[in-house]
Length: 320
Ligand code: APR
Image (tube, rainbow, N blue to C red; front, side):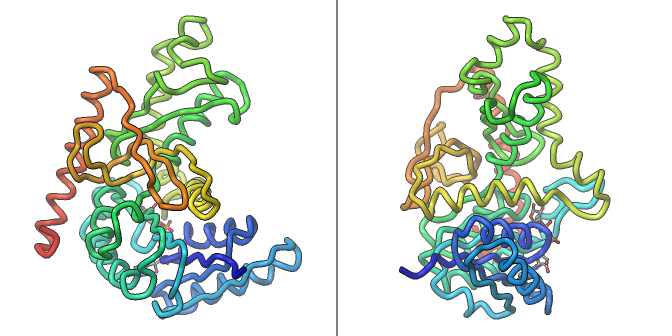
């Protein structure tokens, strides 16, 4: 049986890391597409040359031609520009919306059966635009944010409790921005919910609130350190988890930016929610019960995304 084909649209920091991870995990053959001439070719060759040492079987190719993504099973989109210090994800909207148009058309023409994972920011608005421009079914187009935001939350919690990150589960919903909603009630250490850990004296409500805020600011913290780009290792690892769930029909329950129609009181809207990812893409949106406070935070986050979607429609009336 032929190996799956993974197309990476954007061969920058995240794209290169995605290619490395996909090859090391032998998820399939990798095509790196980028408008920057030489970049995808150079990265593909460099990675291929690591193969004999690392011991993976995967073909890697760099290209400027969308025809090379033909028949891709998965497309992961990072094309666009990342943040610089002081910029919010929303500041990227105008530039990256144009990029989504060309990428959407490329996928529509050459890889219409792919499962598409968008990483480009501002995430929730970009994944919506990508679905519109590509015309692919909504269950086959999603965005990576919740896995990353939850991973950041899990990491900070593991430091606070001094336990293995493996034993910390966490849920972050809503838009991938300042209004994201880390759900403490649904986050646990080996099944013990965070509020119970406060009662047990393992931490305090104040410390937990500080961790929640650090999670919300997690992307900006990295941008500030790097000075000339944004995070790439954790975003790439998170998207690979989603791609693997699809390719191996794992039925993973992962938070991601998905098209929600009916759940959470939303009608036809892309935002971060719990989903099940399997061979049919986003197979289900899991409509968990939110408390009054959680719902209020979620609604605020949805409103922020609605503002970005409205801004997209103003920039490109074909989206209206
Ligand atoms: N088509 C294909 N590739 C493009 C296009 C386009 N129209 N426009 C830009 N690119 C490429 C750039 O040439 C660059 O190689 O996208 C790549 C982006 O890579 P980086 O600048 O290294 O950015 P990266 O850190 O990978 O982040 C990409 O993900 O997390 C988000 O906010 C981040 O939107 C940003 C995206």
